[in-house]
Length: 322
Image (cartoon, rainbow, N blue to C red; front, side, top):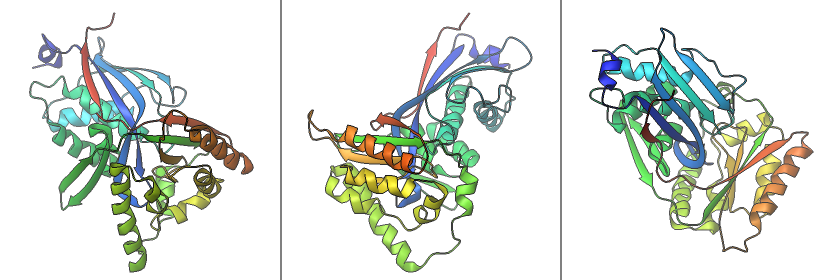
């Protein structure tokens, strides 16, 4: 049965909205991620011709591929093959707000978006748990794809081939600023600088702080965030790759952020605090401090003000476009 027949009377065009994510958050290396209210949107339908069509607006419009090598289409193909079906040629329209290569989960958003949209065309759609397994297999680690799919703060870990996740709601009032500097830093390059072994003291250091971070974000304990976002597993090795990063982390805290960390593998910096009412002036102060820190290193940065995303990727059906 062809996809056109599968889709008859069902979803002829599917729109998906996927949040950005910030992984690690300091001590939670490869295990903790938070969904953010910055979204990529994609619309998927079956192409009329024999080749896939890709249309991109927003972030990455000048650099992302416009053929089957596009990550969302590769993700859609992987999901179809997992279901024992050959994928059709797709028509993909994408509007991106998540900066690519910034440490905000743009690749995870592309994978989750492509899989979730393609899943709507299956006669027997896969569960979200199955989609997560496929997405993690494609991405290589769960810390971004899990919150992109589920929303909120997500803790992920593996036991053999089994993936386990725990979703933790964040306390009301959590605010976040993300500084995205004009620095190119690939995730493979950021991983190559990490040591293969660490002293037990550093492992214990991070275990305590990761637990405290989850408690602080879920219970609204801003006074804990400063030391709970400290890390010895990856940030000391990655900061030298990001001009201005160390100064930005310190400047954000001095300006009033409860905590600050490298977002994912970088180069972005994320700052956290809990709002103290409408008169709380810290957003402007933290934003200025981050800009100044990167400017002192000869770098410009863009600032994104955001909140936690509570629902994760959303899949909506609509009429086919003309």
